[in-house]
Length: 410
Image 1 (cartoon, helix red, strand yellow):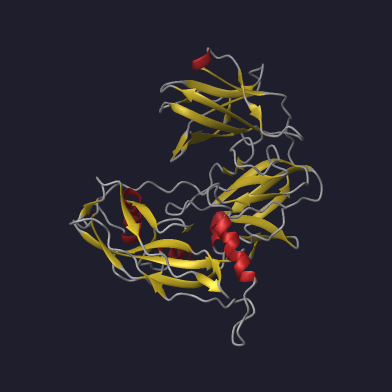
Image 2 (spheres, rainbow, N blue to C red):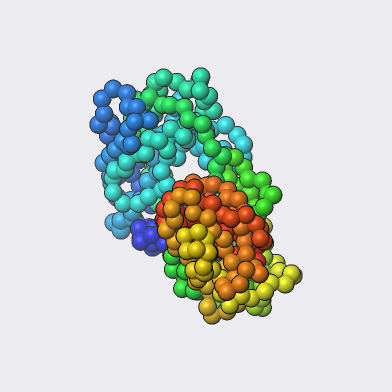
């Protein structure tokens, strides 16, 4: 089994396993020596900060007295929280799951170590637009924001203990209106001994493969949640799903007693009974309703019943190389491969297709769908040339069963 954590979380978890419970505590709730609060400093700005023109603002605080059990320190994690009303009853990301009202935002991903952070004001402004539902005419000219920091200890299952909050400070801002685009579809990643090179490494294409949106499926405009899929060969050696490649495995799906479990760092690898082609489907909206450690039916793994040719090579071809072949790398080399990748520099206006190496009998084109990290396309056989609008270096990942092509800007 492959399981990865932040070192600080491991320290916290190790400490928690040594803790004892009071008679009145539930067995699952450790008893820890916990500070009651800590000091968040006033932001070092004067007047109202223009959120459109100012990239970020720094927040600093005095680190809490260490959490400890019999003088064994444990490292807390921190989350910055911002409220436009001064109330901290329900977080916006929690409200999205059950469609109830919210009054504050968890600004940053939870992080460990340090006692300061830079808040990206453009990202915060977009979150405020979503939370408050402002229009071009209702966006306030000036807005004092209430800011606090949450501190907590997390165990191996990412459950929080000893939660405390700093004092609340005021950040005076000048928000601005911008037309909000629909959220990108929420994409999870496949990783493990069955996936790509089987190394459990973090390199996209080489080690991990993104799941894919489904042509015709609907995705929530605010959360990007919906149904995603991957079709490919599983050899039975095991794999897991990751929600992000940068969250130190905070969001993951593994297997326990034959069922799929969300965010349980001790869960086993997902395995299939026999090698073959499988369709892996994940409903991220349903997954969001499950708590950490819960079994979930949001993930389904089924035998793929249709046929799928096995290609010896795949290539990109286009105006940039006079429509010659530039071969892609197979993601998997130890078993039947259906995913391919290549990194390529493009000029604006370049045109291309993905094709079978040495032949045009199999080729995919179509029309791009933009997203924040690049673009993707549901490849169509003998379809239109793919037109690159924005110059840059892109990682291209292609699945020859579904025809899905994803461009990730590097």
